[in-house]
Figure 1 (cartoon, rainbow, N blue to C red):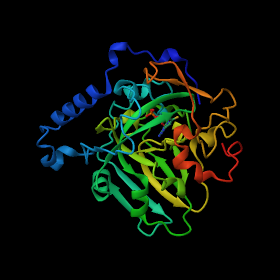
Figure 2: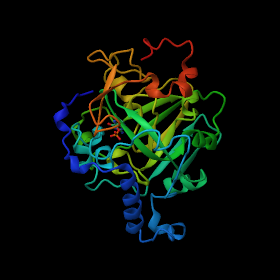
Figure 3: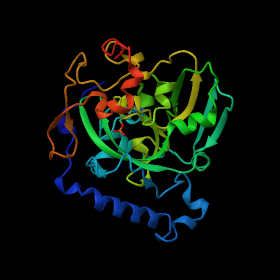
Figure 4: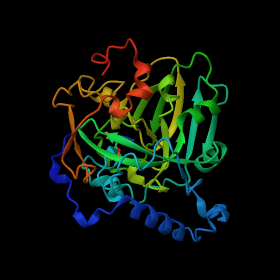
Length: 323
Ligand code: MTE
């Protein structure tokens, strides 16, 4: 991955507001923007809620904001990797909001499943019983990290809806192609579409999540609207944005960064402080936008702190070779 120097990351201190204030303000602003007061939220007309089904969401008490200090909204939404809209961290916010439409949006689920289907995003959220909020750590392979309050649904629910056949062992996720609106696709900075994969047992792990929002608001385009994979025990590049297709397969699929540079990026991409990237250490990480210790660095944790939930998935696997 192209590594940018920290000077890309320049936001005034005033841009950082306490998480609680954000949450209240954002929820209020959002509800105002769709034309409803707090009390009226449940009765908002469907037409106003395009691509926003399920909001406001409820916190899942297993992943509360009180356990980790979330990074401020401004940082999460303006320091991004989304090569379709440029390789500089500041570019996705600008270029993903210039004519690229993420509403309406359809996702297709197919392959080795009993119930292949195409879903409108809002219909899908309704079918899956709504959304919830989870605060997760987010660790990029470039050795920086954030804490993000995601809204969305467990990937396991979508897998259950598709009803995989016994031969299905993997999921292949594909992002959109729209060179007219995606400057990075015109530049050809990666092979497109961006693709990613998971083993089926990883996809049904309780942590695997599809995000539709951040901080109680619909997910901004630059973070992967309207549907984006979140696997917090893996490096951020596994978190494919703006998914249009999920195929269930028997064979391990390719993934974009492995195709681009297989020596440096693998299929698993599990966060592991003991296995360095060929060009830098993964033992610690730069905290974006302050964090618990007021900025600076912190030690990286095995499986990004989610060892209890996921270590059993990799029993017997050589984590150094399967990087
Ligand atoms: N998804 C697509 N479609 N295109 C991308 O370039 N970048 C990945 C991942 N998902 C990427 C993508 C990388 S390298 C990271 S670290 C995360 O998105 C960044 O997510 P964030 O910008 O929300 O922090």
